[in-house]
Structures are given as C-alpha cells and as structure tokens.
Length: 117
Image 1 (spheres, helix red, strand yellow):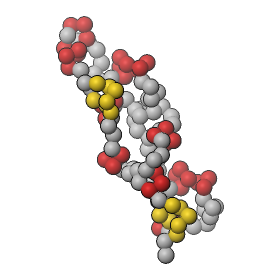
Image 2 (cartoon, rainbow, N blue to C red):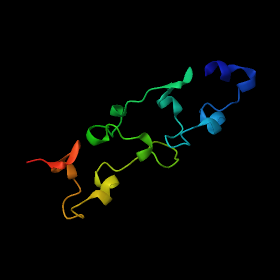
Image 3 (cartoon, rainbow, N blue to C red):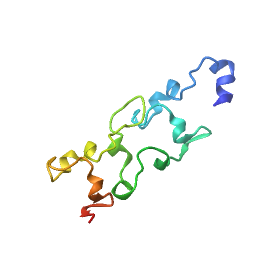
Image 4 (cartoon, rainbow, N blue to C red):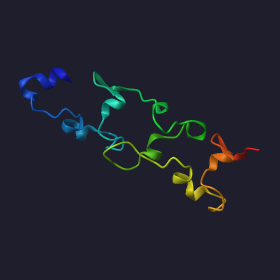
C-alpha cells in the first residue's frame, strides 16, 4: 500500500481502501470500511478474522453461522447486535417475553432446547 501511495500518481489517493476500491468490495460495505481488519494488504485474497477478538464470540450454536446472517446491511462499521440473545432471536422466544431477556441464565448456546438445572 505505501509503495502506491508514495508515488506521484497516487500521492493524493485516500488511505482508506474503499476510497479507491469501493466498486471492488464484494461485501458491499457490510463489514465496514476497515478492510485491513480481515485482509492482508499484500494480497487481498488472503484473509483471516477471529471473532474471538471481538465482544461477540462465535461459539455454541453461533460457531458455524454465515457472516451475512448478522452483517446484513451496509454501514460505516461492524454489525453491533445487542448482547442479549433476544436482540436477534425475539421471534424464536417460545416464552413470548414471559421470562427474562437473559436466556443464557437457563439455556446453553450450543442447544437452546437444553435447559440448565
């Protein structure tokens, strides 16, 4: 990246990737504009992102969720779902709001049908 931006042709180019490559964004801005959070600047085809480094760890039933199930809309940054299960799973609440919104107090994330005793 620095090689391009230091040449006279690109001296005034924006430093943010999407400043020049917005049309190349196959994610359609659903992951924000900080491409380097997942991709290596040397080769954009190589990527690595560990959700464990975020506030929303993907474990249990979320371990194999497709990225676009949460990252649905274009935005300026990463998706920010509520931390409570109910933020995404209100339609799945068989208790119809009759219990706390803290589902994990009774249920485990690997299998919501299993109840802690």
